[in-house]
Length: 127
Image 1 (tube, rainbow, N blue to C red):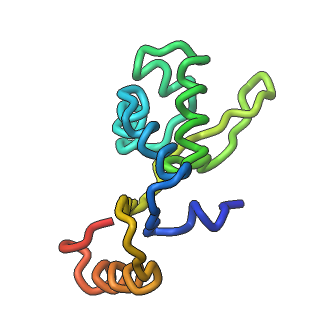
Image 2: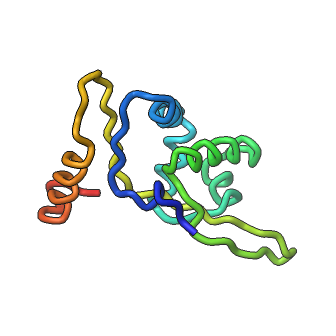
């Protein structure tokens, strides 16, 4: 079951602890590499570790960070021949907007404008 946060196409954040977690995750080269590989297709942790030449425990650390900030999600759970659960990961299609200023903004209006833009002209506002 997906959470409401992972179903959002647009996420607008003021500078906060949540936005700092996203910034920290996206500042990490390994996290970026994971996202780039997942763009080519959904993969299990073992497949990702092999493609990225990473140890599995290192990869799981980064997967947990990406999951926590809703940049990836588990798309399915398979069973191995040994009867173990295998999670398959996929990137989340989401537009993230960070508002670092102090001025109040109308989150609903901004979100509505962006949503309308994406619906009317997907090439102009691809997501």
